[in-house]
Amino acid sequence: MNGGKFMGVVVDVCQKITVLSAEQIQVIENAASVLGLAADLAHAQVTLYAQARSEHFLAIVAQAKPNTSYIAFKTNILGSTVQAGEEPLIWRTLASGTPIAGQREWALGMDALEMRVYPIQDGTGKIIAAASFETSNQEAGADGHGLLVETASMLLTMATVGKTLGHKLYRPLGTRDGIVIIDERGYIMFANSAADAIYKVLGINRVIGRRVSDRQVNMRLAQQALSTGQLMEKEFESGNMILVQRAIPIFVHSQVSRTVFIIADVTEIRKKEKELLIKSAVIQEIHHRVKNNLQTIASLLRLQSRRTKTPEVKAALRESVNRILSISVVHEFLSQQDRGFIDVAEVTKNILDLVIQNMLEPNFNIETVLNGETVILPSEQASSLALVINELIQNAIEHGFVGRKEGLIGVDIATTPESYQIDIYDDGIGLPMNFCLENTNSLGLQIVRTLIENDLGGKFRLFSRSGTHAFITIPRLMEGAKEAKEV
Image (tube, rainbow, N blue to C red; front, side, top):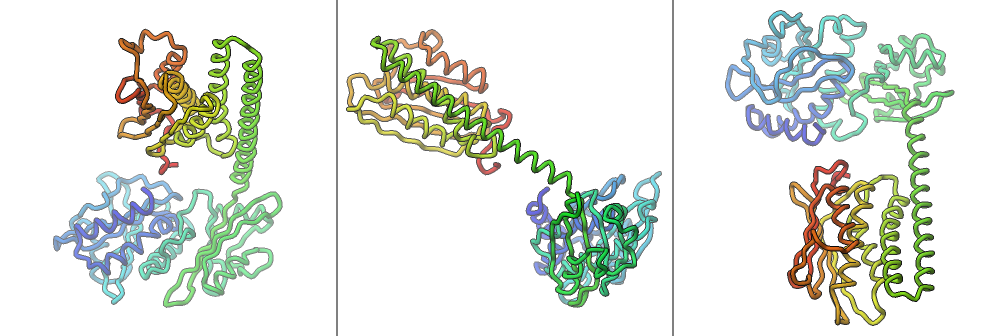
C-alpha cells in the first residue's frame, strides 16, 4: 500500500471506529506518516491503538511491519477492535500516560512477545493513543534494542506535531542499511552490524564511543544535521565504494536530542544503473539505425516505382513503401525515448501524415480527424498496430473516394474496462454489395486480420455507415499494455 492510500485508510479508520476529534486524528495521521521508518529502526512491528467507540474496546488505527526484521506472528487487522482486557499493557499506558515494557503471549503455543508501549499525546497533552513495539525475545535481546525502540518512539513523538510531514528522508530503511544513533553531544551511541561492516571497509574498526567530528569517522553530514537541525542526505565516493548518507535529527522540546544516521553501500546499485543506461543508449541507437535502414529501403522502392511503367507495379511498390515507413515510425519513437512503450495516438498521427503525403493525388482534398484517449502499448504490439492502421488508411484512400475530389478520414481511440477500441472510418462510398471479409482477396485486409487476430489477440470487423468503418478491439489484458497514467 502506497503512502497516500495508507494515510487515507488511517483517517477513515479513526473516523469510523474511534472517539477521536479531527485535531486528534491529525496527530495520529502525523505519527502514522513515519510508522514504516519507526518499525525499521526498532526492528519491531509497530501498532497504534486508540480508544474505540465502545468503552471497553481498543481500536487498531495504524500498523507497520519492519523491513529490517522478520515478524512471524499473526498481526491484528488494521481497523479491527480488541477487548481492552486482551491488551493490558496498552490499556495501562493509555490510562497512566507512562511507557510500559512487558511480555504478551500472542497465540496459544507461541513464545511470548516483547512489547514496549509508549503514549501518544495531542496538542493539549491528553493521551489519545499508544504505540506498541512488538518483537520476538531473540530480537529484544540483541545489543542496542532498547535504544533503538526508544529512538523510534522519539521519532513518533516528534512526528505528532507535524515536523516530519511529507519529507522523503523519512522513508523506510532497507535490509542492508547501516544504522548509527548519535546523542545530543555528537557521540555515537549505537551502530548496527551493517554500519560496522561499511566502516571496517573504510578502515575504522569501531565507531561506538567516537564523536562525529572525528576525522576518521567522516560523519560531517551528521555533524551538520546535529548543529543545524536540518535533514540531510548526500551520496559520495570513497575508494571503490559509492555510499549514501542520511541524517535525521530528532527533536525533544525544540532541541536536537538524537540523530539517526543511515549509511548505505549503493555501489552495486549504481553499477547496475550505469549498465542499464548504457544498454538503453545502445537500444536507442539500434532503433535509430533500423529506422534509417527502413527509410533507405523505402527510398530505393520509390526509385524503382518511378522507373516502372506498369500501373499495378507502381501501386504495389507504393503500398510497400507505406508499410515500411509505418514500421519506421515506431522505431523513430523508440529511438527518441528510453522506454519500450509507444503512444498509439502519436503513431497514428504520423502514419496519417505519411500515407496522405505518399498516396494522395495532388488535386484531392482530405480532412483528417484524430480523437480519443491515450493508450500506451509495448513496442512489439505497437509495430503490429502501426501496420494495421497503415493498411486501413491506405485502403480508405484507394477505395473510399472513387469519383470524388475530397473526403474525410478519422480515427477514434477509446478504452473500456476490458479492451482498447480503435475505429478507423471514412465518409466515402462504403463497402461493395455482398462484401465478405472472410472471403476477400485483398492482401492488405488479409495482413490486417492476421496481425489483429494472431499478434494482438483482438477482433476486427468492417461495416458501412455513412462511409466505411474498420473497428478494432484489442484486449486490455494484453501483456505489457498500459494506460498513460500508469506509465
